[in-house]
Length: 120
Image (cartoon, rainbow, N blue to C red; front, side, top):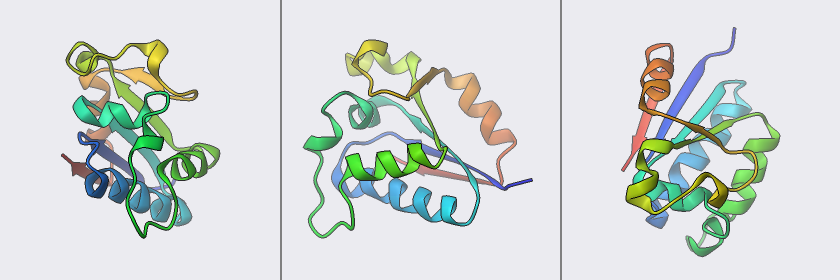
């Protein structure tokens, strides 16, 4: 069975937003199961039009390109529904392919993961 990685994304600051996508791409290349959990300001990454606004000079890909690569590769992207009121977000604001889940899903997934990373 493939190793499991869970990544917690809590920021939309470029250096904190791009790093998890680079790590996730590498993990997928190593046949790991990748799950990305977006909360607080990290939800801005997966809002419609949000990733396009976050730019990091010199990055190998744009965030929308990373998102496509990861989604095409089977990575799960989960929006923390508990943070929706804080981030002024609704399920309708999210890009296609993003699931909604709660804190319990993240904690449960982490309890079974081989690797857990946090970016806040």
